[in-house]
Image 1 (cartoon, rainbow, N blue to C red):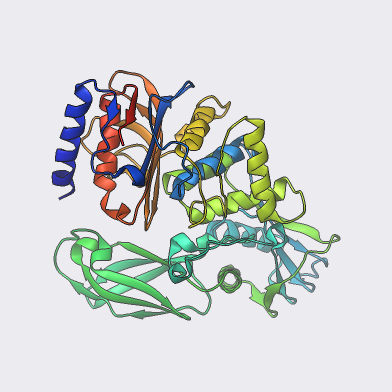
Image 2: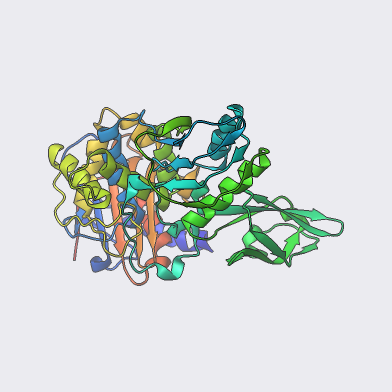
Length: 463
């Protein structure tokens, strides 16, 4: 169906562009619902432009601003750190005082990182925790909002940031067909979480993926699985966020500590690490260059919001990390002489009804990225057409050589990044769609991009 819709749009664009007219045909778009900007990658004026100065909702293409500014402010080898500390010395195999779990805002921290901290603690001979475990989240005293997404609170894309973010606050369920039904393996293990497995095993292929047949939902302390597991879907995975951050972190620590042979007499609660506390174990994240690949290729909102807050924590002004994050981004843009009129920021991820930027502003950002000392790291973070990330199923079989960040909200579709035209020239390209019918326009968006790549030339849209 997608291919059939794509062909007539693409063909009409190519015919119009081959006529060498100076007008840009907008294909399936109305003039007031799209903005287009295209210019040489390394600099120079736009050769294609339509409504380029109108502030629009960019959806996840806003991550380009957050990740490029972070690369230049923090440097590609920046790492986050998470610590375990104590305010009392161990007595034999017992830690009498509190254990402090101090978060650094690591976007990538997962169960393996916490397991490494636990192993180091056990390696010191500590087996019993007599006091409480304190969750120290002072790094991000305020995490900000994503207004108007309350109805999506049970979705992974809407998980809010947290100074002690662990495993993105999700649980993965791997499904295995057994002679007597379906076995479910959870990762990570969470203390106090049970499974209500209502799946039935069936014969047949896994056409369309596991989500076509089975669903996973979190209902309080229970994960519920409904539907069927076709034989062809054996080993498939589903995931869902559970609980609030504090409860998730408490359950994960308790499960991993007991799994490592430890015992625990206290509770898990929030607090602040005293200045006199002694470091017992520490773990560092992958580099920023590696982290932004996850952010941009897979459009991870939570990780992008963690990064935005990190900018505020690393460049404090008044101690409000959310406000300071925006200040850091705007200061960087000013230093780079990037004109971003109409820029509005809420959380730096694009998961926002309020964020705005113009196509020309995003275009200038892309040209700055191409000329950055960290251009290789920035470009490598973007999805490759028909190959990986959020573009792996788009432009398949088309002569499109591109690295493009995608954007998608209910009324927004967007593509922004770098393309190689059929004439061999490289361009920065931005297309922003804001429309109540945006969800219907992805084929038209892809056709427009493919057409621009096939016949680049100076054009402005006729109204």
